[in-house]
Image (tube, rainbow, N blue to C red; front, side):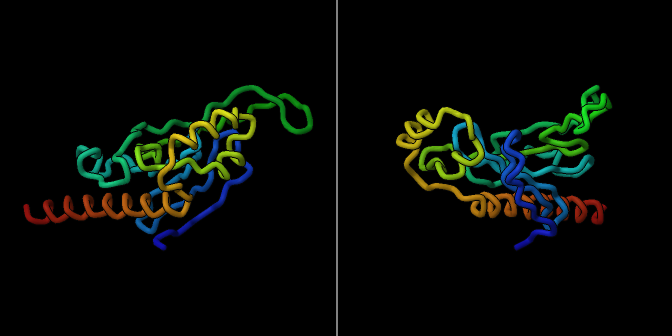
Length: 173
């Protein structure tokens, strides 16, 4: 696989992060459990990357199309308590970090199914009855994190291709 770093993130239930890492082309990525029990994939594009000048929705071919675009943000610092009960400054983590521009896709389209096993794990405390009812409506392909990663890797290659095309154009001038 075209991955440099890959990390399973099972303890991060608050943010529903299943996995995060970096592609061979050096793009950070995240696989998240969506609120409906469908798995979503995201990739971070660095500032000044030539793809940011393009219409990503029309140029990136990914399952169901690009359904998410958001500029990343920096963690906030607030007063809180550490494990020993002392008052201190703590970082409030963010889901999509700066300086990246994050784009993503979901697996909640016609023909997609809900991954109930992962939903039970990552959506603990959610209304499982509602998820089971939804699972009866979403009866198509049940996406696994590995399937979502394949789509992320496709996105990564397409972003690298845009970068290479822009470099070729510059060299022609």
